[in-house]
Length: 228
Image (cartoon, rainbow, N blue to C red; front, side, top):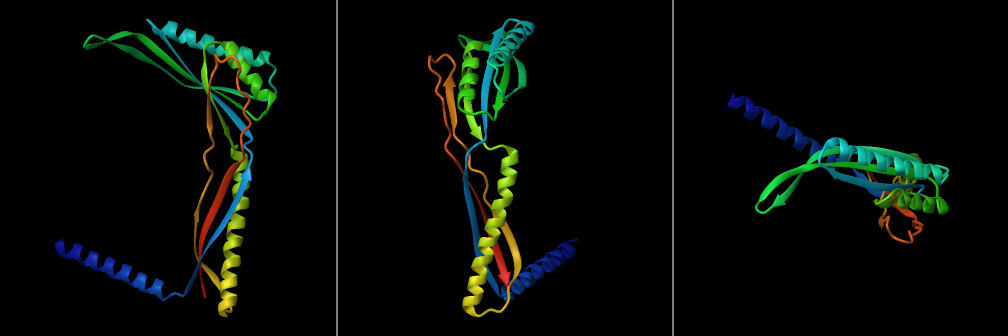
């Protein structure tokens, strides 16, 4: 058994060594291609976190449902053109409180996340803020993002531009050094979408701010090895 393991190890070691020697023997031109764009987020997401404590599950759940229905009604009344109200991550847990040195059960706490997603801008965002305010005591944050559709479309463009940038650099090197022809040996990708800022707003505030997001910088980087 030990001899078999030693044999397999030696075979593996020789294979790695041979691969390394072969790779070192290949003449390479290594370049880095870059591409970047600054685009405006096309989607706004209001994230609302609700919680309610009660001595029984039914009451806690009922109050959360009432708050959700109140928000849905306020949004409908505001006649906002384009939005989706999404409810998820509902949970109910035992509410534990500390009394002296001991923790005791004291009813239940129900939690619910609500999300309002919209592609509307400017005044429509203000209407959503006002609708949340009118629906009751709710705290939320506002996040501007790039939609999946726009991400996929721009990513294809960036990959193409980064590859062309790498190709141009490699051709310049080859022409300068008098190398007649080159071909791709290996390609790796790097880069992605940068996170956007979040804004936390208290719904009880008298004047809800109207926020216009800055452009979002996205980039793509490729590493290409050419052989000749």
